[in-house]
Length: 168
Image (tube, rainbow, N blue to C red):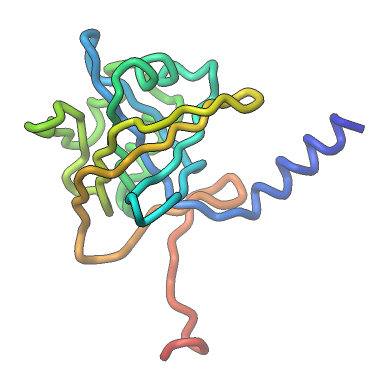
């Protein structure tokens, strides 16, 4: 029964469209990052987000010890970056795709042409099942004027568009 529920759960989650983000952090060994879609806002007061990271992911340990991270929300032109951080490349090699910069105040790597960058202080970590839930208190926000997020749905990349029949 559990295998069937897990299989059905995974199939149901394919119907949950999400903006693709790259979660980054830095420590004494360098920059670390991974693609993530298990991301959501938590609160406006204080401004906060959560990111779910598998305990076996290479980002998990550095994310726990660094105390800070940046959430880089990708735009439709960033499929190559998403693939690089989604497993195509490993370690520091991932940052060879895209024009990454370092934030002067936090030292975090960020993608200046992302849809948005949320620079966060790790406020709380909760372990649940196979994952850790990182709650970040947002300390700084950057965003692009044009809204064109890279979306992942049903195992594929997609983009959003306004429904003409629902336009105001």
